[in-house]
Image 1 (tube, rainbow, N blue to C red):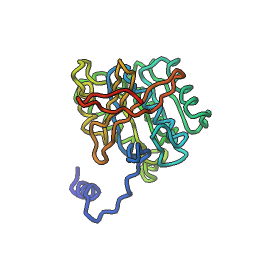
Image 2: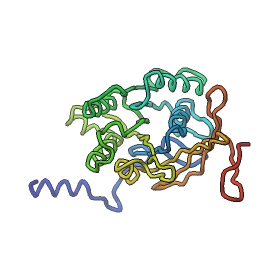
Image 3: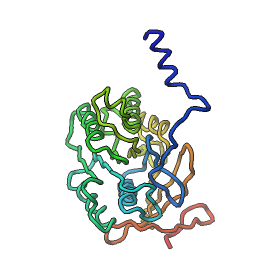
Image 4: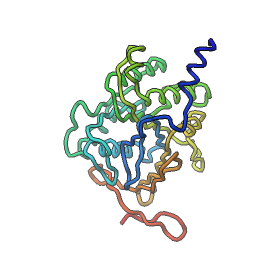
Length: 276
């Protein structure tokens, strides 16, 4: 790199105390606390079958109808892209139908997009297709369920770093200048919720592999989903954040398959009680 190019790049990267920057915007608030920021990543973790997809349904529903179970949208007319790399197509369709039920109406076709990539075997091609979808749909909120399937080896440090950085670039949006240079569409920064399992050992709650370490380090906030097998109560807890602390959110799933938030008091020994 020539000296003049390096000098110009340095000036672009430098932040002064008087640097004018746009205020950080958040798409949601839970119990009045702002969360899920534009231009950043959020990690949603947990063991298998602990409610991660249901939590994502609740987030999407709140954005579409304005509020759901204590989760409120801070903007209207949000565009949501749900990328499913894990489930069969029939399961993805079930999620779409469940959101219709939770909303009480069928969302407009330009607000909610479901894409199933489970059958993709070429990881590089799948990642290129994901980039295309961002430019095609210009989403405000993306649910990437799950990020692990976009790389070959989630224990490989280089692969893990690359995919997390790639997601951060996608979340940053594309300015008019960048769009012109790279032949892309201009689009606003979005929030990407990356779903990733925790390690399999019951006592280990770290996100899986080198990918989990990288995502935990780079994400704006991290949420953990848990299920109490006795009470069948699901709990979402914020385990890390760069800014705003969240309280736990608890819910049960009724006979119609709809999540209903509930209050779960803690017992004297620190464990959760039953839903009231």
